Image 1: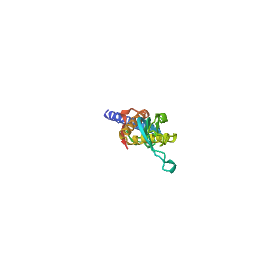
Image 2 (image 1 turned 135 degrees about the horizontal axis):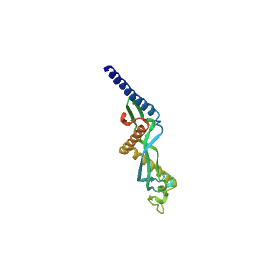
Image 3 (image 1 turned 90 degrees about the vertical axis):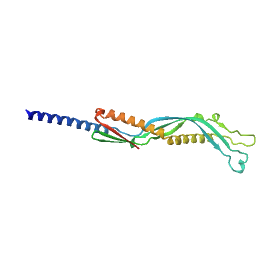
Image 4 (image 1 turned 30 degrees about the vertical axis):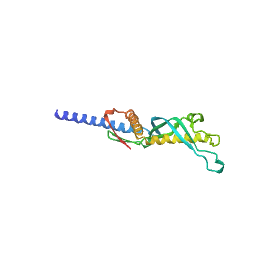
Amino acid sequence: MKNLKGLVIIFISILLTGCGNNDIDKLSENLKRIELTGNLVTYHAFYHNVVEYDKPANTGFLDILRKDRRLFAEYTGTIKLGISLSRVKIDVKGNNINVFIPKATIIGEPNVDKNDFKKENFIESSDNLIFTNSITADDSSMAFDKAQNEMKENALKDEELLAMAQKRAKILIEENINQFSGISSNKYTINWEYE
């Protein structure tokens, strides 16, 4: 009778151990199916700013009657922030899932509203009767490019904004892992590593 009880306990232990291994195998197999490609946009930053653009008078003899001009343009725009999913690393070891998340960066080009760069929206120094240097469509285009570059530089310097985008990526990746794991989330642990 004691031997029978011992065999039953051993048999149940083997079954329970087997179930645990099946869960781990299922977890590992399911997480391999998650394809992490492309970019994951996690945050849209909105900007409202003013760009200053200087148009110097040329220095040639024919430009003697020209003067330096300056224009200001108030503009709005958005920037998408996120991570490259190809740099995310997911490694399953037993019931531990180790996830590496890269730094967030700008996804695509800033989206500045081109309507803000129409000549009628500029605040500009004026010509006078003798000295002129008209603001042209090229100047408007250069001011637009300067605004885009300034927006991009400001976003790349904003460590708090980039950290927020990286944390949002963690939340979205965790949701994916929980959805595709195939087992209860209390049967595995996710360990996070940030670049």
